[in-house]
Length: 81
Image: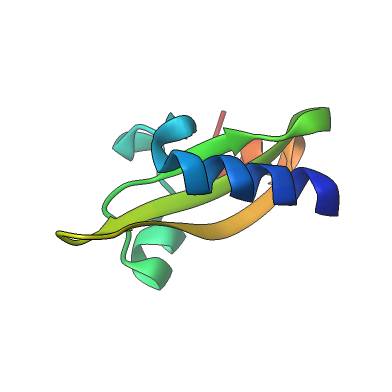
């Protein structure tokens, strides 16, 4: 998993928008309350794992903030699929 996360981090450094944007209606209230997100993205990892992140930006810098990663079953529960 460490290797896959490092690869994902490298990809997100190159292009923070390389993941898939999660529609707001699917967001867990935990993310909004805990992290104050106004956008939420997922990056698909091998073996059906998911990396959840948000993008923070100002006039000069764009940063992908990793929030959590979990297997597909936990992902489905979190996003009520």
